[in-house]
Image (cartoon, rainbow, N blue to C red; front, side, top):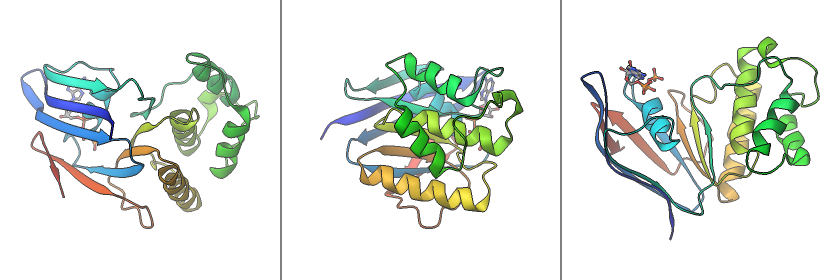
Length: 203
Ligand SMILES: Nc1ncnc2c1ncn2[C@@H]1O[C@H](COP(=O)(O)OP(=O)(O)OP(=O)(O)O)[C@@H](O)[C@H]1O
């Protein structure tokens, strides 16, 4: 089975504090949900930033296969603030190809977000912004998706819809890593990982 991601003995420090120490991780292309746990400041976002290429490791390697199509929502998603949701999604999709508007509409309906509103991104609520962040991470049918606290700001109904959506994507073969403090009832979690003292372990 192909590994979509291989993290090999990665170390990352900020100033002189080691956040990640010799971390290794492999993610196969099999359709799965991995829940990444760890207390505040344990390095979950840092690991995601390294995988997404937003930060460089001090030592070690991050390898994405040629089949990997990575989607990510990390910390506060950045948008073109003076433009609408559809403008932003079209813009993001245009970097690699073009927006599948039928699928984007379906995702927006699932998460109760209006794709065609004229509201500018800067006027979105925290929860609406988070939904937009989730949608941009999955709208191209990415096969490896990193979601950093995706349910932040979601109301109870939206949270349930989010869980159902994640389970559906998993069924369709998507590999999702969710870093969160949330306990997701009904989510089909295949593996739980914990970051503690810079080390990654299975729990
Ligand atoms: N750019 C940076 N400069 C300096 N220190 C940083 C930087 N980014 C992260 N850190 C530090 O690295 C540590 C890990 O931060 P990170 O955001 O990865 O943790 P986290 O597990 O995602 O936390 P949370 O659960 O609060 O989101 C923290 O101590 C943080 O202060």
